[in-house]
Image (cartoon, rainbow, N blue to C red; front, top):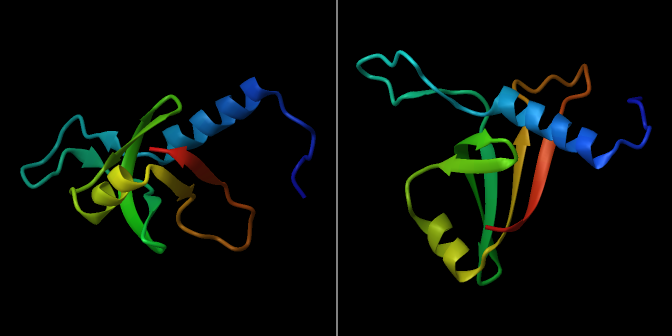
Length: 111
């Protein structure tokens, strides 16, 4: 089992930023003719809600430190956030490998 020592807030923030940096999309410095301009990595699943009906949307993201930016077309998720800014999201390590512990990050809060 993983080391269960209590970490300082600074150490936790550092671990989160390292995880996001390793998993988020990056700007492609040399995009090809048919490129969207990003190097794709893991996705973020954003959960919103409207009238007690959940909506989970897979989106690409990138981060600057602890600030996460999502990339996606406008639609139901944006309308849901405008009506109810309480959201949650998860980023998880890909590909899934059940033979070892894998990292994930669950986020709660207002958009």
